[in-house]
Image (cartoon, rainbow, N blue to C red; front, side, top):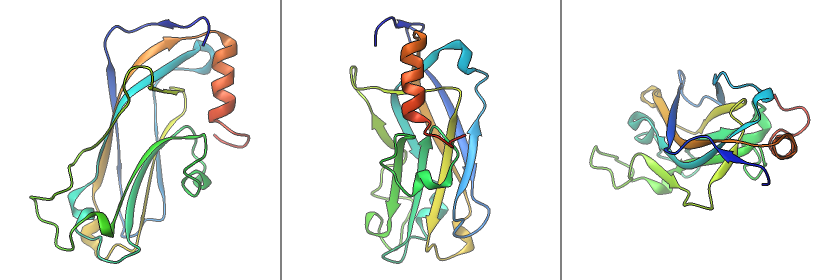
Length: 178
């Protein structure tokens, strides 16, 4: 990217949470209100994402096809979780029955939070003006699966020129995305 300038010397972070209020919520979406508009030409360079699934959900992954998933996206369209290779999907974490023991205890072998680290030079660029957290689950077995899930993201702000900003905007927000 030509003409970029780093606004931060140290990482900043934000957290976003979503609560599923019913068993097998097909999809829930929440938006992070950043106060940064598209006219500011600022991008976030993400270096770390932590996914913290509610433990009560993890205890309900009993069948082969059961799963719970969190995805950080640049749009609110439900179809983005169908195709996780979409450019609008920044990152995601999914837990399935085969990733957890049938009787999950508090001494779970799964490390929570699930951490995705992006080393220098491999950070993810995202638009701060359209950040969404999607939650999806399937085949959970009990009302105990109702819980709150959190995602924490570490980033640095970059100020870029209009051309670079609009290139990323066109990549991340396909036509029809909000």
